[in-house]
Amino acid sequence: MPVDNPIKDPHQPYEDVMAMLLGTFFVALGVALYTHAVLITGSTAGMALLLNYITGWGFGIWFFAINLPFYYLAVKRMGWGFTLRTFAAIGLVSLFSELTQGWVQFASVPSLYAALMGGALMGIGMLMLFRHRTSLGGINILALYLQEKHGLRAGYVQLGIDALILLVALTQLPLDRVGYSVLGALTLNLIIALNHKPGRYIGVS
Image 1 (cartoon, rainbow, N blue to C red):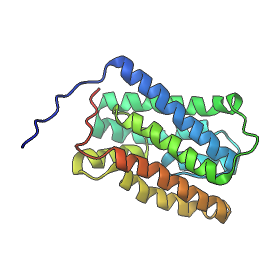
Image 2 (image 1 turned 60 degrees about the vertical axis):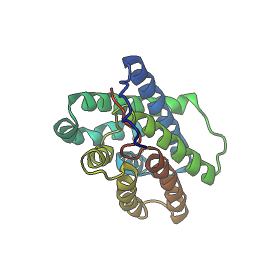
Image 3 (image 1 turned 90 degrees about the vertical axis):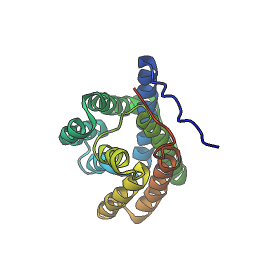
């Protein structure tokens, strides 16, 4: 028996705000775990972490700066609403990642736990943002664009690009750090791939 298409129930402004605050906080907490364990992730966040380790400058500064060139693609392909929400989310992650260093102190965190829990926190945070038509810039914008226009799952697109970034990390980090980072990247992207399939959830803001 055919099933009627679900009626679109647009997100209310307060729902978008709550999702953005919680999503960006989860991502920032995941980044804090990764920074403590000296791990790497993919996308622009991975680039920012690498530059953080190399230069000593904060993750938040690099993350905000690296994403600036991608706003043109966001405006052109996804519209001003998506771009402004993404700009706000990037700003919040940059801010929260710096503040979290003073809010949370890790005495001892096993690398495996940091990789899996950090990846899970970032994946859940990004999923919340995706469902409210928001991203964390950079490769996320490209992944969402390919999903909306061509039906490619955002998580799988992200996974392929992340693999390239992890290969670059081999030149900067010990092999075991990269190995744990791969587990974290798999956790992050599987959460998105399994929970953000085309046609299963329509986020309208």
